[in-house]
Image 1 (spheres, rainbow, N blue to C red):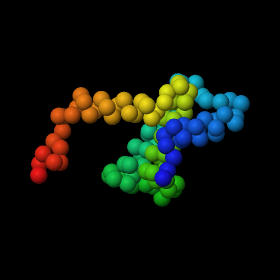
Image 2 (image 1 turned 180 degrees about the horizontal axis):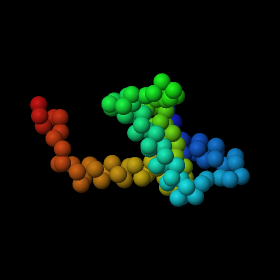
Image 3 (image 1 turned 180 degrees about the vertical axis):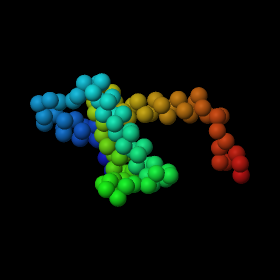
Length: 110
């Protein structure tokens, strides 16, 4: 079994903590998050959209860009002392209550 979200947050914290600079400021992290999201959008556009890569462009994958984005999300959470496991649990609870009747469930169509 893979590592939990909490363990991944600890891994990132151990990595960042070995450098004097530590975590970037929340605004700098937001800029990094935006940059990584743009790179993910570009890769998805290359693989699934109408814009093929130029021959001179490096080969990256959607998987790699998603992981880069997740790393920065974890950095933001750690910098702001947010437990992502708990936060994600709250969001899922919200979707399961507020939006419980919003979509057609597969079992309802059979």
